[in-house]
Length: 327
Ligand code: FES
Ligand code: FE
Image (cartoon, rainbow, N blue to C red; front, side):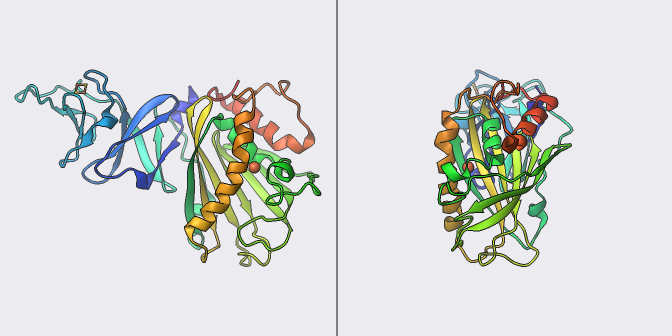
């Protein structure tokens, strides 16, 4: 399964503290996250190789080892079992090992991949723009497949209905033609225009906002826009929102947004509250969609020219060999 070789976000980095292991789920695999003595985040299968207890119910010792809650076996950052308390003189052989996954921190999140692969973390150009302020929103636990959530993010023709009075208006529902091109990591849609009553926290009047959408990995996307005049606009600056999704099961996802904005005044909570308002408008619709897995056969649902970004996304998933969260 190609998804297993991709990096996926699994937790907010700050939620993995030095002392307490954290249980997460990725691609139906139970994973325990913890920090070793150096503070480096580690990811193991959340199943002790001795009798299968959940390692996440255990603790991290003061020596920076993960201790199983059942018989107290201890595991080093490498996964090697170092101690079996029932046999104090026993030196565990190399085969006495927890299953280790690769983990790293980026974009304020912990990322894990279940098997080795060539794919890099999804690109987020705005992350490198040191002028922009970065913050995360989420997580949101959503009873929908990751691809349905990405597709909703690329979809502008729902603005006037789901986000009426915010990102759209029933009086301006037409979608002008826009461009979509395939890229090595997904797609790029440019020239996407929307008439928005309240495009961000500071909007005081409706404005035409132009978006660029990028699919940067099968379950990741980035929206970039020039903030409307009179809000947080600074000449030549663009703001971005990255959508990062952990595919928990084929029909359950954990969602984060990473904002890269030119707003240096508003408290985090206010920026997060705006994003929260928008996403909780999407969530009930996302959770209502059937089939919950995104159909990759383009004949399974109906499409119009306004949907060409989502049609291109479905073609990309098929060509990429994605099987998790699709049908
Ligand atoms: Fe983990 Fe026995 S099940 S030490
Ligand atoms: Fe929406």
